[in-house]
Length: 247
Image (cartoon, rainbow, N blue to C red; front, top):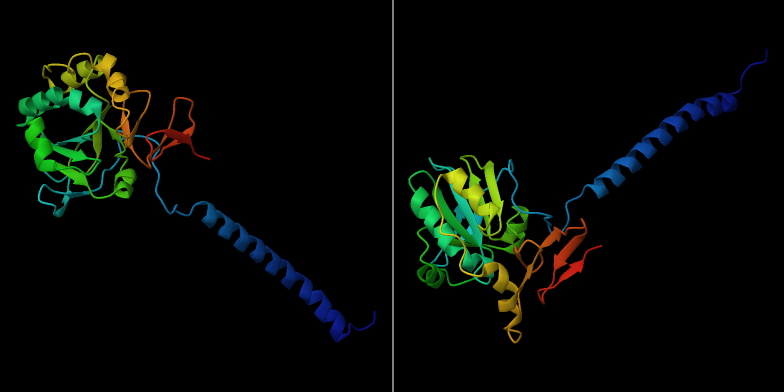
């Protein structure tokens, strides 16, 4: 057997090294691709309302005097978070229900209202006679991160932020009975003819542009909100109050 030259030895040593480098390169490419797919989007999106089991972080809000503050979930009693919008017809028709619920349950629960739309909180609270503090969410992005996108919504949140119960929409029919059973109260019901007049009321004021969208359950969403419709398609609320498909 002849002696192996230096060039031949270098040739055989190079192949294992190239193989290792190739494996490392493939691994790096796969990791970069995976990180790109899992990167956070520039604008957070939500595809639904508040869900049971969700850990609700503190909510950055603006109080009646225009000061920035937070709604925290560290009180002795569970918090009933009521999500509303002054432009939401279903919210206004549900006012008697949430007002009665708060008055009957205030010794057992802490009630807090959060508006998804900028509004004069002092005037709104005075007109609606709500017996609990109401704030305005600080931004649409903060609302979406917390699934605070449809109104009206009601959530019972325990100390630490865990959501124990939720109800989407006004308290009508089955929703009213479930809420009454949960809190052991009797509610007055919706304002007259809500189910028949909500769409008519919207249609009767065509000169005033609508700044929110309604889903098939009657929940209202502010512009930019993204949800899934009854066909499980992703749709986004536009500036003109209409839904459009999101690809």
